[in-house]
Image (cartoon, rainbow, N blue to C red; front, top):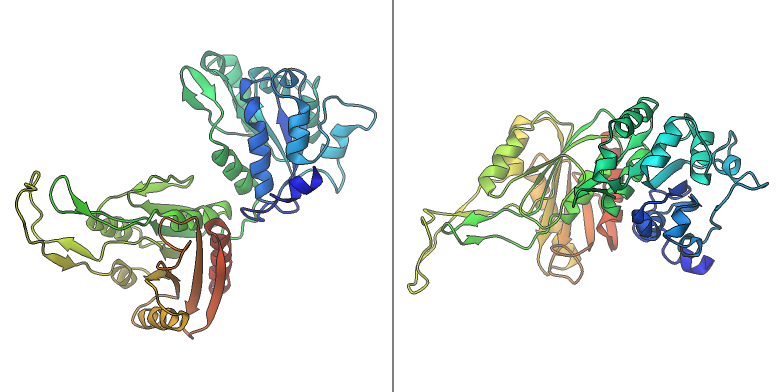
Length: 404
C-alpha cells in the first residue's frame, strides 16, 4: 500500500510537499469522489489523512480511502486522541482541514460548536488556528435554506473558506476535483508575489477567411494557463487573456478570438508588473476576408498581411517586466537558442523562453514541454521535458530571481 501511494506522490508537482491535509468526508453521495480527490492532492505532494463521519461510511468504505492515501482512516475518536494529533496545539499538527464533501448537517454543527463526529471534532479542535476549507454538496433546496446560508456566512466571518457548489439538476454538486485542488494549493502555497499585477496571454487566435472558415494554429493554451495559475497561487493579481481553446482556467480570464481582439486586450493592461506572452498569436491576417460562406466549387487566392508583433507594441507603452515565448520547428539546440536570442536582442523583453514544437511531446497540444530560458546576457537555463505544470513552477521561480 505504501509503495502504491509513493508511486503517485508528487507526479504533477511538489507544491504541497511536506504539507499534511486532513480530508473530512461526510455523508453526501459526493463522498464517492473522495478517493479521486485524495489522490490528486497526493499527486501535488501532499500527505493526506482521512477522517469520516458515520454516515460517510454508508456511502464509501474506509478501506477505499486507506488504500488511496496509505494512511489509517479515522472512523471514531479513540484513546489515541486523533483530533489532537491532527489539529491540536503542537508543531506536528496538520496544515489544512479540508471537508469535502460537506453536508448541511456538518456545516451547521461546526457553526454551532458541536463536535459529535470525527469530522466535526477535528474541525472544532483546529478552528481558528488551522485553515479550514469546506466544500458543500447537497440537494439544492437544502443549500438554499436560509439557516444553512446563515451558518455558511457565520463560518466565513470566522475565516473558514467555502467553495461554491456546481448547480446542476437542482443539486448543489461538488465542484470539479481540479477546482478543489487549486483552492487547496492557493491556500497553502508560499505567497511571494503578493501585490504584483501579472498579465498572461495564452492559446491561439483565429483569422477569418469568410464568416465560416478561418486560419489558426494548434496551440491549446495549456502552458500559459499553468503559468497564470502558478502566479495566482503565489498571491499575484492575475489577468489571463485566452484565445479559443477547450481548456479553462481558475484565474480571472478574458476570452478573445482574433489577433485584433488579443491586441486590444493586451494594450488595455499596460499597468502591470509582469507580462508573460505565451500565446501563439497569428502572424498574419486575411486581406479582405469574404462575407458569408464562399463557394467550394471555385478556386480563390488568399492574401495574408503580416500582423504587428504585439509584444513589441506593448513594450512601447508598458514598463512591466516582459517575458516572451519563441516557438521553432525541428531545429538543433544551438539553432533554437541562437534564433531566440536574436529575437530577444531586438526587443525590450527581459527573458525569452524557447521551445521546439517539432519534437515529440513538446509544445502545441502536448501536456509536457522542454524549454530554454534565455536572458539578455545570453545566459541559458535548460528546463528538461516534464509536465507543463511543473515547468510553470520553475519558470515563475526564474522570473522571481530577475525581479529581485
